[in-house]
Length: 209
Image 1 (cartoon, rainbow, N blue to C red):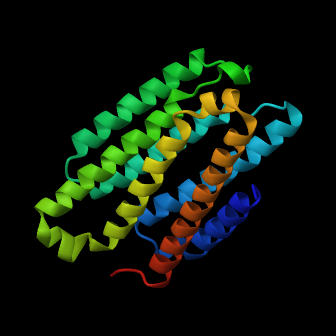
Image 2: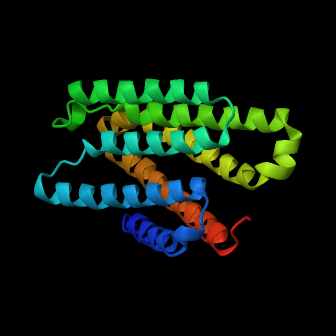
Image 3: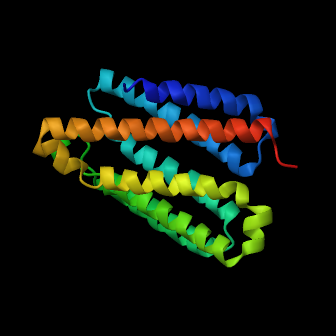
């Protein structure tokens, strides 16, 4: 089942590269996100084989998610100061945590930054939703194509936050419970990557003039 994730990422990056010249700025950023996610996925498998430990890549994934979705909402939102403040908080905490994070001991490994990042992105999606509600003309004419996208991003990162916050407790608390949660998380990732692939394909095939 874990091979579904890189498979979908390979398809998504291939679609993104094929349509890249036809994509707008936001959709191009999603292509970069899929490429970065694929690189981290492959790196995690290599490190697992060579070092039997790939936990440090949680930090890299947190930074990738935060920076890409910061750029996306910096493009979409008018209230750019809020988006930038949230990003500064997330990046600063992630970098500080990476210095003190014990990635060599699984029992002590608790990457709070990986839980903080989804929470900050959820807040960004809510900022965008409030802007759409306040500006009906923007919703009808300019940015309606991103309404569904924003909804999916909100749902995904809200669920990811719920999955990742207690991950250390689950790993140390019981093998079977942790396996069920991690399998559910893998399925969530596959569905999200599949949606992004469809989103990129749709906007590449039918670019908005």
